[in-house]
Length: 341
Image (spheres, rainbow, N blue to C red):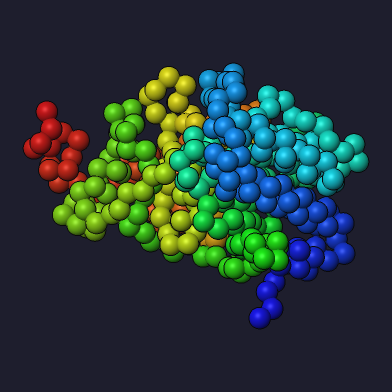
């Protein structure tokens, strides 16, 4: 059986277009780094104390040993691609690479790093933009040339889009190549599965709390059907599951100190995920705006994020912006109903 490799796919997509060829080279470079990262993760404790905390970012987030290792591997790989500047979660400021580069790349080198030592899937997220000056990394997501993420789990997979649908490639450990597994992913518009960190319920605003309570009420509640809840604290794992079988992911802003705008970053987390999801017929919003239309103000800007099945994301947005859009709520399920003081 003949399989389409990542290189084959990118070569056909790029053709003779020099900018696309640069994007293809960049994705291939990232894929090379991802294989090395995957092998370190697969070794677990045999690779050393990869979950050890090395220090803290200015915002208080911890940096693990593998965060730093993955960051270095990605940066080294991209030095061989036509990348002018790299923005990373692990660096306060962008890193200048090739002076003749035509591209800007933003990455989260290791999404889900709190799960490094728990044998749960983690990943690398990337966004590729045209380099057009000192603020190249602050372009809205709708200007991305390509984006995607690697998942390091039972399979090492690459989910990517270059604006013509969303593809999934799986790393073949025999040939040492990424092979096309899903040529065009489509997320079902409807779902009965949502992912949110329920331990923060007391901090949510009324709209998010109402949405989750309506789902939890099940078939007897205003939604009229039963829902399943998922949460693994690794966004790439959540996104992959949604791409494969539908669902919706919520990381809203909340009342905790420092969480008013959520904890996810617009440039190198929300934007690439939104591009991938929209190209698979899903949606991504901050609750009020389409993610891909938001103009970043800084590299590490945080943003609330909801993405996944189209109809469910649109419903959540209605909860946020228009109380009239909520399902009709009986007193039993109302904010001040029979069971509420």
